Length: 329
Image (cartoon, rainbow, N blue to C red; front, side):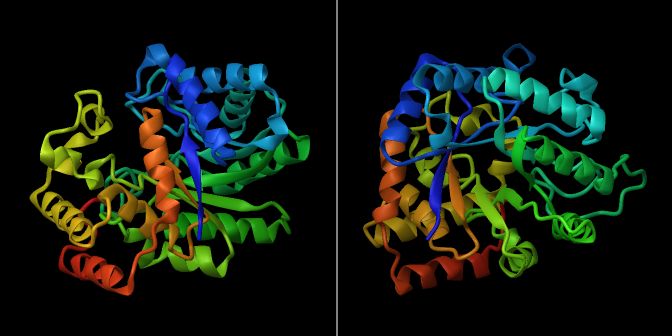
């Protein structure tokens, strides 16, 4: 069974209390990114890292936690990050690491991750790969050389890739082997009841190559909680502020989500806890990355660790996956 990781995306004083509460309840792995908080804005760029840095400086005990952050890739929707051309080359990666270290007020980052690939491929709600008419510039070997040098320097302890494809993962692995690297590779990709595309190819790579895997978006931006069906979602809820929000409005997705919520209720289980417990039971999952806005949500999510799914529940879940496979890429 996997464990849980807290995604630090907030910047207000309540976030400090959440960090304290999470640590007091056994969460010692905190994941953030230079791009956070969400919703993404130029005015708040880096604020989540800054908050964690102040928290760490005040509480101490840096060695007691695992801290992960991410360097943004090239994208038009974040033009303020290295002019929107933040490819994972030497100059950009060194700049990203140095800036994150400063904001986090630490000497090292436990896991430094590439937030999304440099190249044109399918990630961020794109279902399948289409051969690009014009590819973006990318050089995985150069990227890997820089990451290995950063590990050797002690500024990062290890590195990871996020929102990656099977080809991308194997290319990193192949080049690490070519360099006789002893470094470890982590992968952070979306994985939830509405998006099991990981199982098509990447999960076998994770299992056979013994890769650390972090499942993000365990609740599909909250839609698996059921709150968007019963009207309890606030305007500030993540999906209502998500710039990818239209993806979550397809008829197939809504139908599948309602079926999963119904399964949970029919078996007397909270939908949120069923979704997280299902992930925790998956053998390829090292940790589930949860994102919460208050203490009650955190406690509620943590209680998923005490939920055991019966064979009948798993059978019902798999039946919906066969009926409506991966409606939320």
